[in-house]
Length: 272
Ligand code: SAM
Image 1 (tube, rainbow, N blue to C red):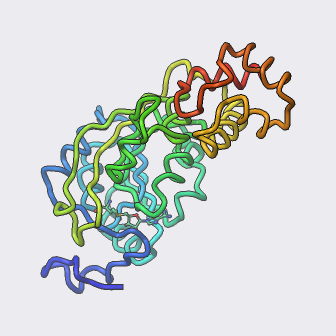
Image 2: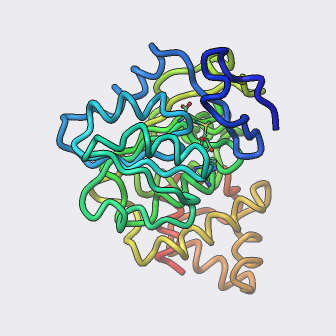
Image 3: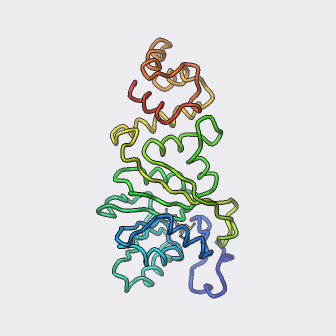
């Protein structure tokens, strides 16, 4: 624990920074405004915020949201925020680990999602938020490296299971970079803001999502092996059966998982 990040006027007002909870507080007001802008709020939406922290983004969202539910794991911070918004009927502070929260149930209707997320669980949060009922759109501040993976093209070194699983159900955009100096205390990495917007017609149906994820995860575990070999290993098939499956999906046996598009993986799943 350390309190290096607190501005002098914050000392005493906030508990010590807990780096183990990924607490890097964004202090640049212009960037905070741009992050909120990226959610395109009209004033009527239910907004779920992940990790409000000291409330820098929460303050802006409380002004712009129809209803705001902010989920904070740190008990002391949750308490401070609860007091701060006690008079605002449209703001609810939920003290919880976001990964244990059913976001759709909490929102109890259509919702949008936003968060300067804790970096130690960025990928689990992104996957958790893909579970239906999904947000109408989501804006996240993430490590730049994660933003690059979200928008990577097949064949690039950033392209992987995260890219494909997100692309199967949503469109990912990397909007702008955020330097480490915009945070207090600064993280060790550069950051970027991304927006995730679910497709009207996803490549995989809700009941296919779990087997799709397993297939994609297993395939990228062997990203440099040929697909014939990958499928034999995943589904315990002989060469003929693996080739028949690939033929049904219209995929060559010699290609590698890292070159397959999300559409290829969806066809492959159906061929299985
Ligand atoms: N939104 C604030 C800002 O922009 O300054 C804080 C961002 S900080 C990077 C991440 C926040 O997520 C911290 O407040 C941290 O306590 C909270 N957090 C960490 N793990 C969490 C979890 N599992 N569930 C909910 N919040 C969590």
